[in-house]
Length: 354
Image (tube, rainbow, N blue to C red; front, side):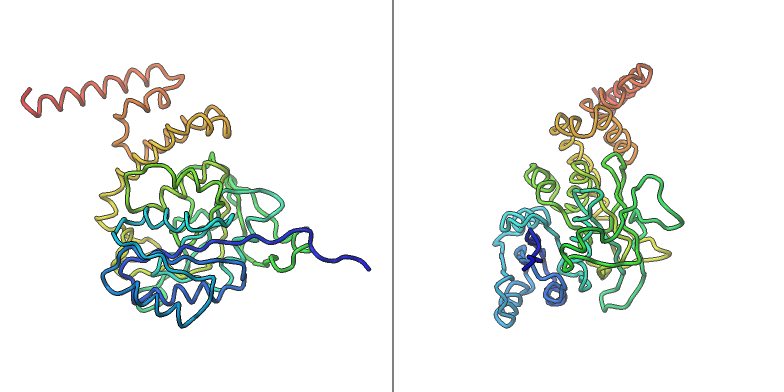
């Protein structure tokens, strides 16, 4: 009799729900994980010392649901998003990891679609990001796409590689086959800038995320900027054009307020004040890991990334550690940079009366 069983097991996915004072929303986030069509997951809810009773609410909810795949990790001190990411990540060992903000919601095929994309037979990637629907605090639909997501909007994106659906894997493991009319695109680490939706729309390979989360960042929030930007450097990204979750704009988000117009989501002043911290953290990580990232992506990778990074965050231009990367092979640019740094130092001395 012919053996028709598949020669492998499908991977487990770790889901980390991070919660701080989101009692009105956290139950819907948890139930959206329970509703996933892909069933091989475990979920850690990390409560970051909430003061609104979120942890007690989750405890009671988990007792009522009684599913061993769900567990609560309650922090005694507030540590911010970075601490929540690290604690949830350390509490699991699954080869794929997805973070779900407690105020967001996944649609039922989120895990299946992402895992199917990751297991494609064309390109392996460090992370994947799907599109999201934007809703307000009451769940009213505000928008059908996250504008910053690098998905094809008018024809093919020439810098990305189209990933064909299904293929041999679909025949070998029908449980992981996911059919969608929305394209999936692969972008190499050389494609820089923000490519993804927000935190709750991303799934990471554990191996790509581990060195990022183990780095001593100064930022306590805005962690998804660091994890997406830096994990991408290890293996590139898959962009799923399909909306697979709900991103809630309720006025308490760090990265956004309630203002939404024409596809643009306004950043809060609190988030903007963290931009420089996040930018410096990303540069620190890149410099600390420059040797293996250059081996992986080529000797021009670090200068190209830093050039784009300083263009986005011009306050980093005065960092002397970056000079040799930003001026490689450009002596006149190197001279202008040294002069600019000297003038800034001179201006600083004059402003203090020295």
